[in-house]
Image 1 (cartoon, one colour):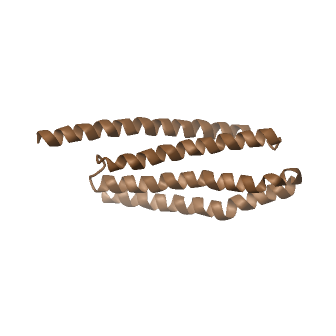
Image 2 (cartoon, one colour):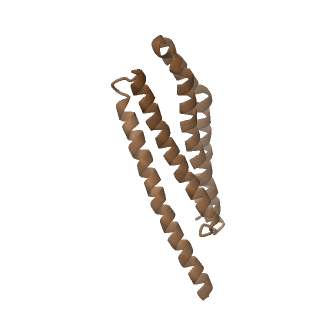
Image 3 (cartoon, helix red, strand yellow):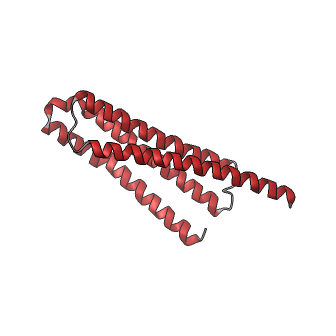
Length: 158
């Protein structure tokens, strides 16, 4: 991996992390507070909605930290090290946690009746893409495992 690629990925990770942090601190609480004001019958969901949203965004931040570390391992030529599995496993767990949070949020919204006609699609998209990403990462983990085994065999031969 070239230095330019590593630098570019790191800049993008930092920007994404900062944007997510901005959303966690400013945007999400503001939007949810406005919704609670506009729909006072659902104001009791304000705190759980903020907590759930911040946790969902934190899952994205965990993935970004893992991507940063995996890029470091690639840049150092140590991606076929057993330590890479911990970072990949963390990405998979964070993705499944995000899917779980989306599903819990969907259930809460439907049970309380706080749902609108346009909320169904983002929920489905989040679950489908989150599940797909977690499954792809599982496949990538298996490929990394096979490559690590082959690298170990090659090192023994040489």
